[in-house]
Image (cartoon, rainbow, N blue to C red; front, side):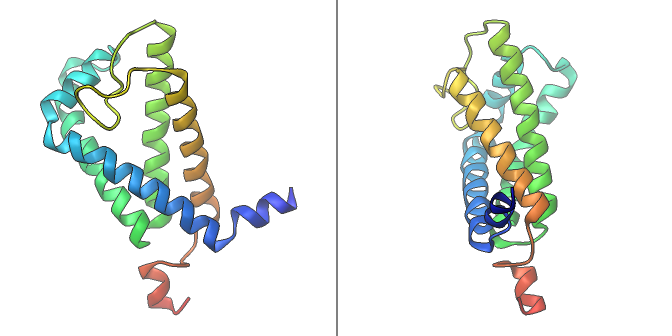
Length: 154
């Protein structure tokens, strides 16, 4: 257990996790920002959200993904960004799980709104792994390799 804690708290390991999470979330936001109508349709296809909230979610979520991705990479509000990323991943995990259980044959809407990945167990595993990565950043993340750390001299 001590070895895992040493690895998880290593500043280079944490930087790697931050970069991966940030790049993934920035990349995921681009097509959704460009095609909010298509993303709204992808959200609708999950059949989980009230109709009144779908358009708002399709507009807000991609910008939140972009903002969190940028902030976690540059090192501002690292723990808060990782926490929001973890929350979004939890929402994705629940949505994908319910869709898989119900046998829905839909595009996940993850990276490309149109013609993206269809739902599969691999997507669920990917999101679970990223959720744990975000949790590690929340728990062990600090000012190393960040703009905030540069202000403090670390």
